[in-house]
Length: 237
Image (tube, rainbow, N blue to C red; front, side, top):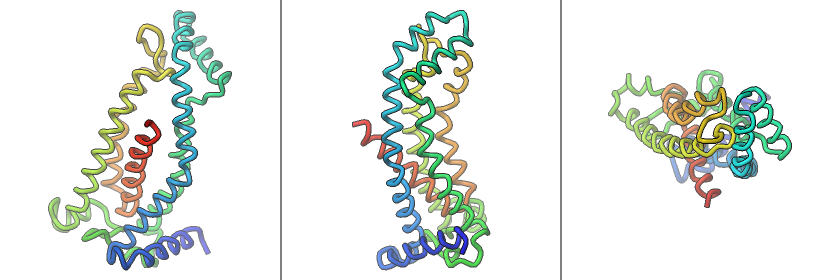
């Protein structure tokens, strides 16, 4: 039995349990529930990532001192910053781990609902009028933007845009105070200025992803990103 069939069976079992409550959309509800379970599993890592971010912020005064000391030697400055992070046991990339651990679940859903899961009963399920194995292009071809399936996508796009806007503002705020990218007198460390400018806009790439992947995978993305917003708000309290 392959990992894909095991995963399909798990989602089908969840859908059966939720059918009395969600009826034809039970499989969609099962995906949302499955996503919540995945996020609960990685929640300790998310908490650790927030702690790491706060630790990096606490290093900002020392980063500024290093920037002043090595202002004429960008290469040495980069080395000194990395040495400081190693000395304090603070990883600049600690916030990436929760997202990376979620990728297998996303790709499993993508596989099941993009042809790789042919033969499983999940392909017959829908979210309201939109098939879980369909894409936005299919909804546009079958009723247009304001057709029954198109309206489902409009709702997902609205939620995704709201979450992306929140993340955009938060990332911009972080970019102004991030000790890895901010140096003395408001100057950015060499080589990282462009990254700092682009990062806030990456949140809006989620809209593109939701539009092109199967609806089941889009549900996973929307649920996970919404969870991230609520989780971060709770951890920042």
